[in-house]
Image (cartoon, rainbow, N blue to C red; front, side):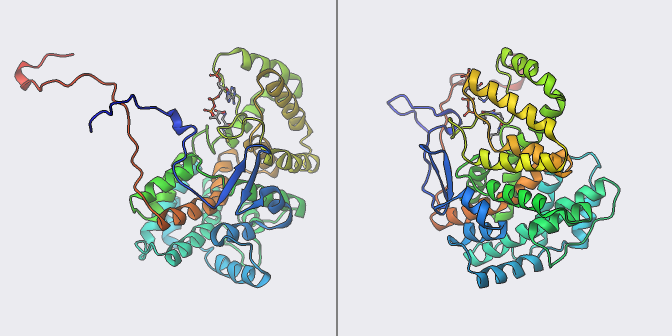
Length: 383
Ligand code: COA
């Protein structure tokens, strides 16, 4: 490809670049508010169960009571995983990261689906519901196998949030804990052209299948700059250990050049993210129920210092990490739980991409060696 006459503009990390339109969600810069199909996410978290939000992201409207019942019947009927899938999960190293096992399991789900090529809107919606229903079962079974325990089969009479606790711990906790978890799923469900969603849309743009797109998206979400931050936040809080250590820890971190404080900063929100105060409220509720006040104290010291000294605000992973920890989840399972929710946003975008597809193919500015001639092997010298 020839170089253009005018110097090309490079947008590192595609920052500030609009690559398409999308009706799924919007961030309002002035209020730092996120809406899904026009509904502020905090209102959805307050008034709706996660299943209603999943329906909204796929249909563009909240369900009626009757529509929700039908949708939930469908989701609940898809929760079981096959014996072959269980056999696959049993092959994994016990210390394999659950994001790697989940990525492999979704890839295997694609192999199990004889109709993987059906990319019609109805076909992709059915596959999306299947992944929504089976991902919690896969995560819980994988966790239990890793811990030397027998997997627990899903139960149809439970909501998605309740059923996940049941499959993971063998019991459903207090309703307040379930509410907090359910709200976190709603907050995590969708967020525009973030790295993993853009990855899913990029894979889809070559007309590859939905399982391939989701497998790739899981790989993208795993990184600590993206979804992996919720795990990194908890490792950081554990490293700090006590409220007494927090101030000196953050002062030292800020004195180190380029040291990242996990759970802070965002590509889009530069003045704070409106989901954070709502999720923080739930985290504080968990701390009150589960005797976790010390994490609240550490959280407050870090946030105050980051805002005062750097004007960098916390992102959603900051309250979610300790909230999941207090619920009793294993830290490496935090990002797979994010997948359990974001599968809705990813698949909504995959279906939207296919409605008006164009292959993603950006350009790069070449900065390598000038053109040269290949030397025959016998006369080549080491560089
Ligand atoms: N801790 C310390 N400094 C941070 C920071 C953090 N968490 N986030 C941003 N900064 C600093 C950067 O070092 C940079 O400083 P500089 O101008 O002196 O180089 C400045 O703030 C601007 O940051 P930038 O890297 O341009 O922001 P970005 O939009 O590219 O990055 C993130 C956004 C999310 C990748 C970044 O904030 C980050 O790595 N956060 C920690 C990981 C995390 O929580 N990820 C979850 C995101 S939802």
